[in-house]
Image (tube, rainbow, N blue to C red):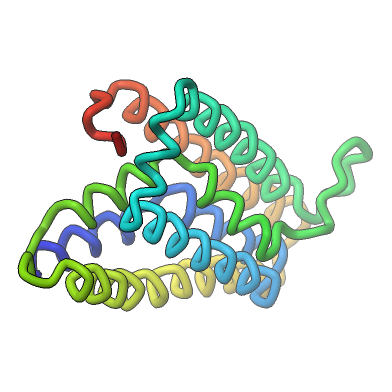
Length: 205
């Protein structure tokens, strides 16, 4: 169980699209919109976990081309999300980004992200500590994952919101938004590379 907790801690606390977009939404739009977004991420994360535990994810990824389809959708959505964060509050005429990505936005990010399925598969199929009662083990894993997931994402949201509340010039705030969006895209690029270079056996099959 200790090995599982350590793995969850480092997988969640390490900056990825979820936590970076959480900070970006907080910085660009404030705490309440960010909280709605985090709620969507939370439901999406647990839904993906349930899909893995029940075997639905394995069925989904058995469909030819599904991995590429989800990957393409996730990249397109993350690019859109990065643009919204980068241009939040911007007066540039061809960009209008006043409406934050709320609950549905967070839910969508998790649902179409192939990497989320890979991570959940690794956590739920690995690190066994109660083989005599797999249902109880899965329930404990859900509890421990959320015990780490919730405060970690709220901390990133608080960090982003703290920047939002500072009395910064529009130019400085715009630069911060651009930096956050760029960092998110960098992590997306790394995740994309690892997703395509991973052997198929690492995916639900």
